[in-house]
Image (spheres, rainbow, N blue to C red):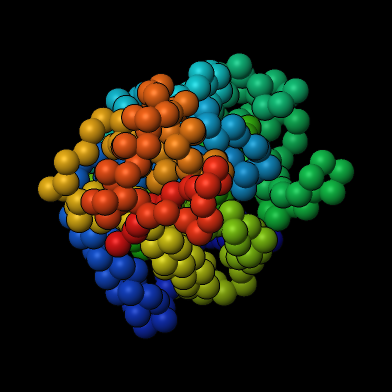
Length: 373
């Protein structure tokens, strides 16, 4: 036997609960704290945080597989599909729209059963042209292995590393049926733990010609949404996995070739430990990722009673959302399409109310910054 799926007791997974129980508790606590913190924000700020998280999740999930997606197109596609009104939207191509549609179905419809037809639909969304790069692939159906065994690889073309080989195509219907029956069951297991197992199990089967890693991570995110009891995603495993991609492939390979198998089952404790630790780091990273949104929310809450016109509000939001260079009265006039005198009055009014402050320097180079709480 070379791989765990070749074991006679596959897929009977076991683990040492004492090793991972503390991690489960830590992760569940962080999930609750994050959801509580985001729940205190207003609707618009929650949507802004959701847009930011989903954009990074989709972009980084692609990067794990070596695919570079246009972040502006991803953001625009998500915003349009969720009905979020944000500035600077750009057209998105069919490929990106498909990836976004798959991810939104996984998270927004997290309580729906996972079925073969749903997986076929996700796969079709990922490959609308029925091609992976220059290669034509089977879309919306399981692989047939006519070009040889399905090998799970990483690295650039010419320097690919084989991590393991998946089960033969003729076994897939039986294997997927077993996986879906388990996933859709009401088995008594912590939902975060179930996310980790589902990810490993699906990656092991590798049922499609391509896109298995992205779909496995979508399944994991879907299960994490179940654990949160919310379709709003404010943290992303894919972002953290991208940072730890080398370790990700290493632990997957070690788990697939694990010799820690007994009559009781296949011990996947090391994989669960890594997954939960990665998720914990993801939740910590989220604090800094969403800090801009949280700071913005605090700013507007502090100044909620102030009298601010539409030009001033729009310019302040631009400063939060990534204003290039320094804010001057001439830039204010140009962006808001008002006169120089009106721009100066707007700025002076915000400075007097404590929303803006003058930067060091003066004369023509006078510039302003937000006065943050």
